[in-house]
Amino acid sequence: MKPHILGIAGSPRRNGNTDRLLKTAMNALAEAGYSTEIINIRDLQYSPCLGCNACSKTGRCVQNDDIQYLQERLVAADRIIVAAPVFFMGINAQTKAVIDRMQTFWALKYVFKQPVITDSERLPRYGLFLSTAGTQFPDVFACAERAVKNLYHVLDVKYYGSCAYKGIDQSGDIEQHPSALQEVREKALILAQL
Image 1 (cartoon, rainbow, N blue to C red):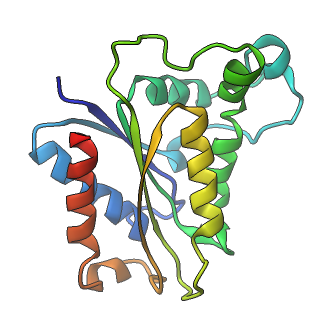
Image 2: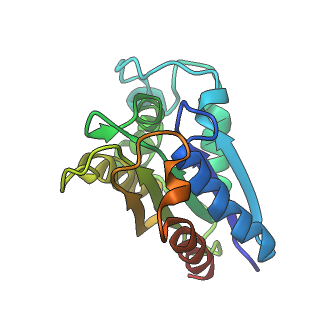
């Protein structure tokens, strides 16, 4: 059975560079016959984590918003692609706020000692990270990649790797990169076949 792939668009900028990377990946997967869906963080209604630790006591977040829907989709997915830009040397604030709200999964796994995925027959789950940054600093993606790796770890998703491109600042710059779009297509198709 072919895996279902969930794309998370983390950029606040519609049709920006990371959006274009994600659309390229998801279009390649859809054309190859995979089931795909994209959730745009900018379209969700949610608040940041309150740090109240209720999820460690009850297993549930006290906030009732679109994060519960996103969590359902994250559990349902067999493959996950997070596409988020780097702002100020880290993953952008909107994506980081969503990652912080995944604390309920952390509590489920480490406090309540329960699995995130309860069906042992499910395919192994894998995840990919797509990103762009305006600067050329050698470690510009280090913090963002660590945040996504931690998210995947908590979700029992094996980190497959990233496609991350420096010096991509203005909307549409990624279209001028000599290999980015092709690399993303290829890596997404390999991700689906793992």
